[in-house]
Image 1 (cartoon, helix red, strand yellow):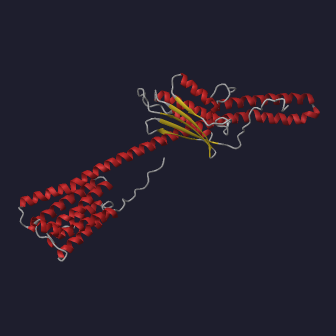
Image 2 (cartoon, rainbow, N blue to C red; image 1 turned 45 degrees about the vertical axis):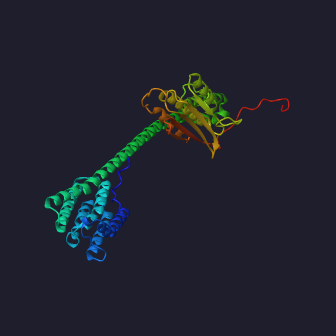
Image 3 (cartoon, rainbow, N blue to C red; image 1 turned 90 degrees about the vertical axis):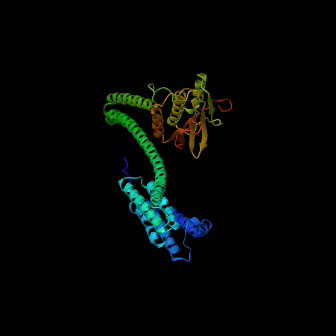
Length: 423
């Protein structure tokens, strides 16, 4: 199981910081025009005044701090609220309110980058206290405002400036955490399925290796010894040599019987003499399903060679079993759904078989055990094929098997009957 990657520092936020600074400076330029239109705003600094440049410097510094707030929120957030204290003495008045642009952005970025823990809650509390204090002192220095009104206004502005981005950031962080949890759950399920598949494949390989080892150890070594003895007996004791030849023939027959039994295990059939199902038998399988009431469309490549002419017998069996299992799964888990079986012609030395069903029109049978898909994946691995499966956009299900074509696979067929012209 892979270890958890080391913690990475939160990224910087140059784009939000730049936007924040440009918005604040733009509002500062528009402030004299707004004050001329609304005298209740009080005196505001103009670009010709030193106070205006002080406000601009504070806004630029705040924008720089915003760029680092995701990485160092415990110090950056209180810093955003502390910088405006310079304006309480240098340029008190309505220009002080422009500093909330950076504070709103900073609180939001801090909460999204790192959901509140003990240290972040402390930083948010300190930020709120500094913001309320600075706002109250600004109102007091500006004059013309009652103390109770100044305190109330400072508290309300603090609630809005800190509370609003905090709430929005918590919602986004919660959605992100839920998405990450679902992603990790899916990854865990896939790792579990892969582990089960690898364990099943390993058991099959061990079983086949054991069978092959028994065949080689029990029969082939004896045949080799009897052949060596017969070589010495041919001239000196022909009768005994003939007996050794009979024993070799008996041992060879036993080897063939054991090999047939092993091939029977690969075919998953008790009777090893039974012929292997091929893609040619898919049509009969579909007809059987149709006779039972299923609606199935079958698409096969046109030609005289038949589907899957370039793949070996074991690959034919794997493809047939995949179609058989997929149609059975569709009947069990999507009752009433229309199915489609497509056997694509060879492209880039690959043969693709797809089984697709639509959404269920019957009652929901509930989730399946998943062993059918595991079995299909095991068979696909035996022949080096690729198996993919999953839900379709229309609510159905699709299973796709891609088989490689081996140039060394024999394509021999029964010879054509002799005619008078060819005799």
